Length: 359
Image 1 (cartoon, rainbow, N blue to C red):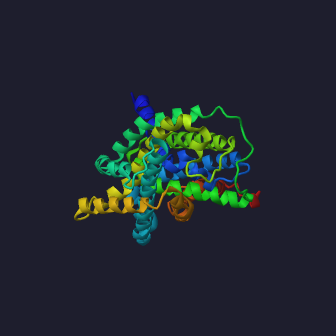
Image 2 (cartoon, rainbow, N blue to C red):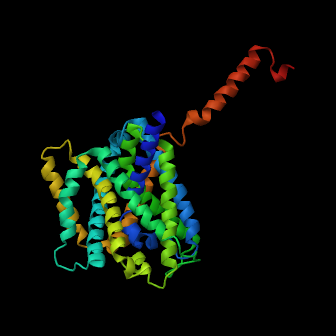
């Protein structure tokens, strides 16, 4: 029974982390061609998967150590916690806006809806408001239901042969690495509230973090390979759709909607939680949703191109401080324990009259 419960916890955590990352920008390919270099992209995909696993596990352990995201902010950042909470709120709002913009793009590209009013994103707002009230468990179950459809579609795209590079500007190795770090940092930063709260509940553990990172890496490689194997311009709003052709327009759009909903729910979660204890919480949440909707009218590509790198920089700072201040990666007892054993043995040796200088 315990093994079954652990397996379910691992599945829920891995699906949730995967669903948090795989949104409109990921599935459309626009986000991937923005952050991954045109040449030698597969090696950078491997690096990103390792970074995802490390960052997921770090945040999970922070949540387990401190008791959740809010407690992690207080324990790690101290007086600077309100600053990082504000940065997180703004970043989450931007991610919500980009997912709503992705819904608008999916409606145009997949369903041919070209009206002046973005009806689809407006219709999702009440659903988002209602589902977020169910907390981490609600996010877990939504991802567990929708993520398998995303897996099925992405792995169906895996038939293309491996390509050495994509059309587009090549990057120096150092620049490509910086871009990949920014990409991983941005996504892990935005997923931090959910991961830390999952760590506080003890759901899934390290295996769930590693499995989700592996799946993200595999799906990234498949989608980039799909774009590289076609003659389309990767600067398009939805490169993957253009690469696959109009014959898969409807299933691609439906899968995009699944990915958008999982990421949208995870991105809205910290905003919903932050407003929970404040006066006029419902009105504040409604105002935030309205702000996200207005920001989404800028479009998906401008948000990815100009705003995402800034969020990535903030995420890199956040994760570096968590790694240093939490003591989970640079914990003195972790490295000092052996020293203590060595010194204690030395003391015992002295007590036994076995000092080297007296031999």
